[in-house]
Length: 216
Image 1 (cartoon, rainbow, N blue to C red):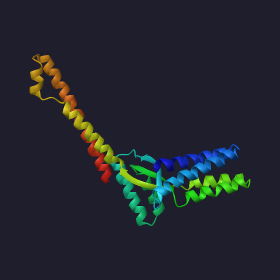
Image 2 (cartoon, rainbow, N blue to C red):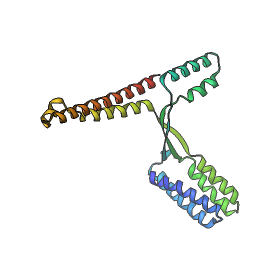
Image 3 (spheres, rainbow, N blue to C red):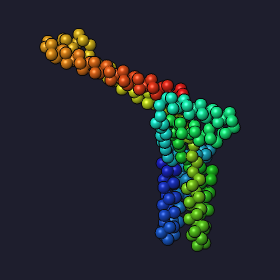
Image 4 (cartoon, helix red, strand yellow):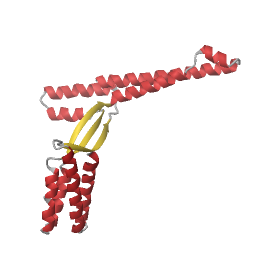
């Protein structure tokens, strides 16, 4: 059903392009195909109200330290206490650090009828009205935010995963010694181990910083 709905959407855009190019015959043929695609979808599930045709992912991040974020939060609270809601909203919107997944759906309750209404306009020579009607159909897709994920949490998980991978690469002193009888090799292994440990600690500190930011 998703395939048919997506095809119907793409063909609607194609019909609009045909009208803009002055090719009414092709536009009518494409619209007939769109109607057929939608009839297939509805026949499979008459109670279906929306069919997803696209998913968009938007990332908003903030580049500031914890102290700056805390100060901004405090200032927003002051705005709210003073009844300055709009200023608080503007300030808080700049602190968003999140990943938003948005679903775009084709509304079966209105889309098929809107498409059927375009063909008579073309037959009557009302091309501009037909184009406007198709444009309105394309602009009336239903957009819903499916999920909002705090970005600091995702980043913290990534840092922890990196730290875990690095930690698995650190060999124990006993294993290093068994691998090499040369004192110089042993010293080099010890130096590498120290560097790896520092990298693990750095990743864990980054993760901790992101988690604090998520709680702020």
